[in-house]
Length: 302
Image 1 (tube, one colour):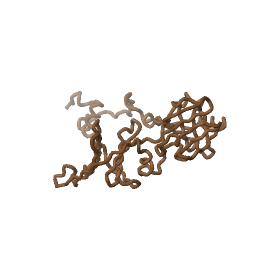
Image 2 (image 1 turned 60 degrees about the vertical axis):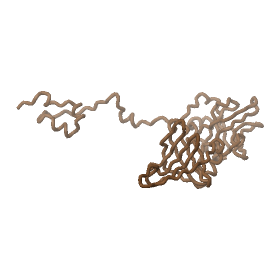
Image 3 (image 1 turned 90 degrees about the horizontal axis):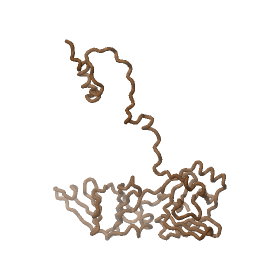
Image 4 (image 1 turned 180 degrees about the vertical axis):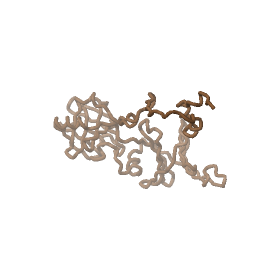
């Protein structure tokens, strides 16, 4: 029996939609040997080479506008600074621990006197006062200060400057976290939350709890974040940290969480909220979550 015209040739789109098994059921019982398939590129689908092409570094910084004026300084022990001397505070300041990867510093203050001296303070919460985390030029010498330690820097030779600028990579700040909330209970147990400080990590919350110097990172996630505050909880709901404008609480409940139908009793502890902006040195040193970690500033090494 002759097959209807529509059943002898199965459109390619129909085969793709039905899958291999269904397509075989409706295919023509006999047909000439098919020619070798020809690959067609869909304009909307990236090719394999495009899909595997290296992606641009989201942290890379183009230094072309400052390149001609950028001075490279070194301390003779493998540490480098890159800056525009006597420029405005908005000009970039970079630090490198190896002369290959330069990381931008968050300049928080600056001042200068003609071409005789200048100072720039940079972010490093391990040192509360600005003068304890600064770079500058005074008495015809460049220097970096971390705490009470002052390290002298000198310009590299022009040939070395050209070599470094030719292969070094300049990136935005290395540290991608920021303090979000800090609280403690009446026994001295702390609760600390941080998150990302760049848009792509804006909701990457982390939570630690424990005594100073011995905090534990908890597998909790942010379940509420709005104008009234935040709630962080374990997936089972047995532990919750509630941060809001009226009262912050640490809630421990039974095995079934806050709505435990098996009789779980919730324990609620009121917490004392500590402003993170006033406790940077505590957070980044004695408290413990970041102990031993590099922040990407000169004070990592100097």
